[in-house]
Image (cartoon, rainbow, N blue to C red; front, side, top):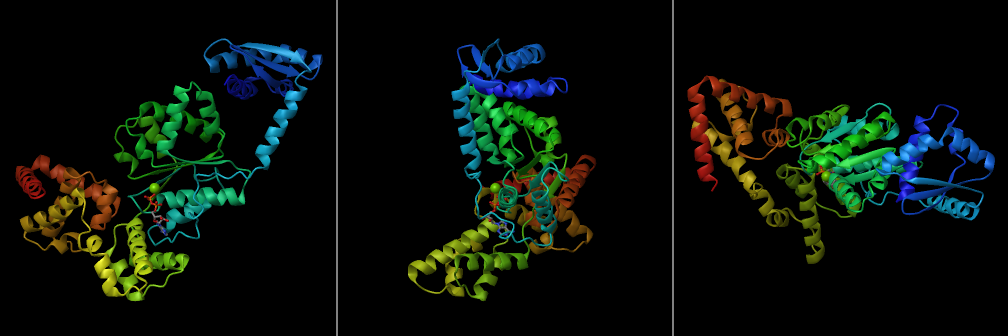
Length: 444
Ligand code: ADP
Ligand code: MG
């Protein structure tokens, strides 16, 4: 462990020393560590003298700072030869071993990702980052609801860089792993190796940062990791399941780091893209499914790509087990739970109930709420449904946008508008109360 401190202190001292003096550090080799001491060796007395004159004080103070206590630096001449060889060998082995990041899933590539009109920008930007990491779009945030391809796109960047630029160190972690690593490092009193690991990255990919909600110490650590990497022009990409403005339990300074660079929003794919995705997945698994079945699935499963894939897996498994082709009837039967009741979770029941109750309150058709008509009454009803969805359910505005087929800013606008009206007009406030009560009682 002291060796980690020493290596970190060495880096720090390189930065602190005046230009030209760093050279005297390069002759030092780590030999061993004791309780509160380390031993380093120099190839000859001359080097040791220069080290003592130019660098020792700085190294000593950096080491004490990092270790949080005084560590004796003992010096010897020559004897580290054997040790050096071992060290050098082990370094060589590390360099020769394939530098693969085992956490990256090789199937997540740009080739396997099918962008649609709405996600084309995100797709191309991610590709540009992969080609020139740390240059133009740093940091980058990819956000959007579940199953829309955030992890896929994030890992595509990692896979691309590992292939094209194997010297670059790519680290992919979920925010959960980052948190666990951090906690372990504290428990094992080994925070320097945690720091070294993450701050050595050329490309740091952190998935699902919403997981860090209320985890203030981990946020703090991420904040410092971010600053270090950012200043060194290392590429950082985050993903999040909602816009940063909607993250609760985060420090403002970390939030501002997340949004500092390029922000990319992933939305649900359109019909044509859903068809293309299904066809590509069939092709990849070498299975044939009738076009009528593909259209049926693409028409009915609009929520996200994960659901689309899930239904395809169900059908393929069925066809293999029963040894039959998938006909439209079989697809309808097998997917009936998913399709006739796509609103299976409690949250979803509330959304459909909200829309239904609001439509009946305003005396319009349910379909008009999600439709495009802009007559005053329909607009009011639509805004109300959006406002109530936000108020009653846990959905993020992006998810609400996906449901109502509107972009995030329209949703925010609708919510603000109703909120303003509620404050100024007691009739509106009463309508909200009534509707909310009805919806809650019907959702029980
Ligand atoms: P998220 O991280 O946003 O929850 P994922 O990246 O895990 O979503 O995507 C869910 C599944 O859908 C993955 O298997 C992924 O490969 C697939 N997927 C998502 N978007 C696309 C797309 N545009 N083209 C092809 N596959 C996609
Ligand atoms: Mg994901």
